[in-house]
Image (cartoon, rainbow, N blue to C red):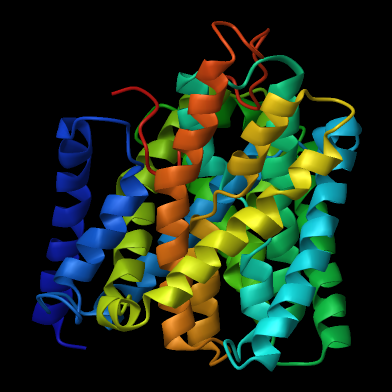
Length: 412
């Protein structure tokens, strides 16, 4: 690889990442998640735009960004919530979405509209919880029971598709994939027991004392954990998103069992992940988007955008009919239909493995961008129409502070 080209590509990518928050803050009107600007910036500097950056030159850093994105998603996930009623309803809603998606995409495949059945079907069952949380928080929509249902639906909409990706988007047999998923899960479970085995008070003192010094002990071991599970997942033939999600879940257990400064560590995760690696992943993904292809066939984008609402969103009207009023069920419809990071990941995986048509990959990501622009705005408008304080109560958050968005700062 040409070193000069690699440095030039990284310069262009980081320039987009640096300029994005300034542009996002300066624009009037509703807040637009920064991920949208990252993708647009990637298109501009990529081979389909100005051609000043090469995707191959930034691939390794972009893969690290994908890993950090899903490590933080796994860290946000509270498994206990899935055992309660919000979790059970969320899983029921996702199952309905899967059934609808399988039937709909089968019809599209029969009509010759898609040839990449599995990745498209999975894409229509995802929810962008990380992107939604700051928007909903700023509009007071995470309070009381409604907030619990939102967290559960978002967690299921991220975790379950990731497991499905590991099972079905694999080069080997599905039985082998199931065994490898189980093996990776068992290894992650074993790693979660590390705090129990490392009960040395001296070791805990070293971690606490080195946490905010130049040693940055816990942050470095967190990165080791991430890449260890990425390597393990890859060795077992799984995609990195599974290893990254499990790493986040294991890390959540570590931080709560070792008596460390959770708030300070989370701020460092945000700084390293959202500040450096994750923007590279999204800008790099934008560099692969064929905007000309979307413009030549905008019907694909429109169809996928509508299907996200019908397949992932509309089941909420039925699933939550006994626990939420109609207005909040309508809000849930637009909240659950919002999809972004997983669509980008699925497009990347599908293109890499040759299981997704480039036109469908571009249209899916475009539909995801449009969903982030439209659906949360509709949901917040419905909440405001319900009057001040509607649905607000003691707020439930999975972390000690408001979590950082997939690239929208919590406070500007």
